[in-house]
Image (cartoon, rainbow over all chains, first blue to last red; front, top):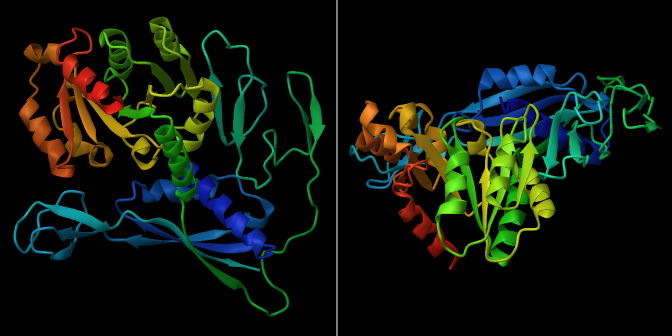
Length: 113
Length: 288
């Protein structure tokens, strides 16, 4: 449900930076979103379609780079792909693992005229 | 639609109200429209408000093309900007302010109905210590919780988020300014009842407390790991009801610790006061 306010933030960030670059229109926004960023991907898409947009952003499309989370084992330093906050190390079985990637929520780039 | 001035807008509307001062008209409109006017309406060039003033906005009327005609092609701007950067920046400003004034700020999160407001009432009235409490109440609608806190004598401000499902650092920043929080006090922020969205939004708090009640089922941490992952303290509430329920306290703790092995626990009944002494002690030590 917070995806709409996230989208509003994204549009503000892009608008501000596009204005600095003297853009007349922005065509595409590229996002990096980790699977543990607390974002529902479908809801993000829905919010993007329906968010109120300024003239500069009215035809904007967006692409999402979905980032698979990676955890590191504090016991044996092994790094492995995961899909949850809690996962056992597949090499040594330790549960002392920390998420090192997969929380991202970033505007990577945008394409403008 | 804003219920105070009747203006139409599609973004979030946030209202800040102190009990006894309900007549005031203080709210924000976030449209994401790039011009920082509190009463900006991108689709209407002219409109009037119920409270008797009208104004006109000038909008540029250039015709923007969404594609390039001159063969230059589009330019790609690399940004690499965190979407929550603005919130996190404001949260750090709040945190610095709290630290400078020795305000112990608690961000209390839970699902609706876990007993957050009762717990706050109990903390304020039951500690028997000389501590000053201030409260920010977050709810989508109504002044109900603020009135309950107001009855305890603690200064309180209600933040109504409208359609918003969480508080953010900017709301806390505005609320704190209106609340005039004194030095060496405890600021309790009761977040909107929601175990999902508030986990993403740092408010600048000193500690985040997730409240779970024994009526909710011991597997709540498994179902909503994000909130338990991001909290410092877990208060298990309504333990006076344990004899009537099939709720395993140890299992609940074990599940929560899976996602956050640093989590500290308090098991309490805000209604009977059982277990509250430990919580009072912990708060007392934090601000001494």
